[in-house]
Image (cartoon, rainbow over all chains, first blue to last red):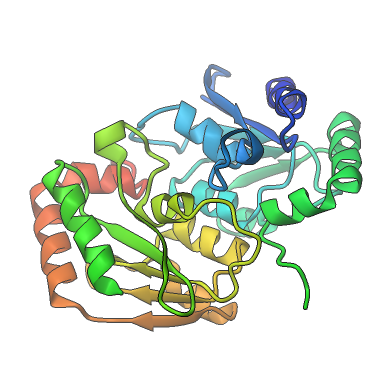
Length: 145
Length: 145
């Protein structure tokens, strides 16, 4: 399932965007929605990858058996989405380059799996090194001073 | 400032949607963005009012001095947004019909003001009584059983 999220991240990178991808799956592995960060592409600060995948999955009545797969540890914004809608499980590609709220989600009953996926780490580490301002903008890390 | 958020909520209701409105202001009271819940209108589960207002404000580099005004206590999804982007203050119209994460935000340094606005309470209470399924869908309260 991480392959789908990673493909989304690569697509975002190819578009000149921030390379984070996500996908929402049903318990049986059916893909419900996929997406990637589109801050740059659409000048939309609200389109983090997990939000884009959730949005693409459309209106649903019950998320308890769904699985959110994301290339990067979900920030508080995306963690809040996962908690509010009761998404049952989260698979995180990596939390080396950034650690968001996945421990908080685990404390609140979400089944969290953190991988240590080399492709995800390399893509994100390279991006952060090359575009620190864009990355900081995306996670709301305000300039100091 | 609550008047702007309330006007958005009323607009949402008039469109047949869920009556929750929000607006993001600069410290000097300049309106940066406003919006309302558009789950019904656009079949988009990601468009909670606070997200819509944040999106309408466009890309920004620093949210520390901004104020998010919302007719209703922000759910975890919207609270996560506020925390991640370091929005400095939140004004909540009411938290009688629903209580989200505003205490959690206060614990994490956000300046939180909770009003007890009768217009907001009445509008939301009436909506929840008339459309319980839609309301439960919007906050991810899955059907029991």
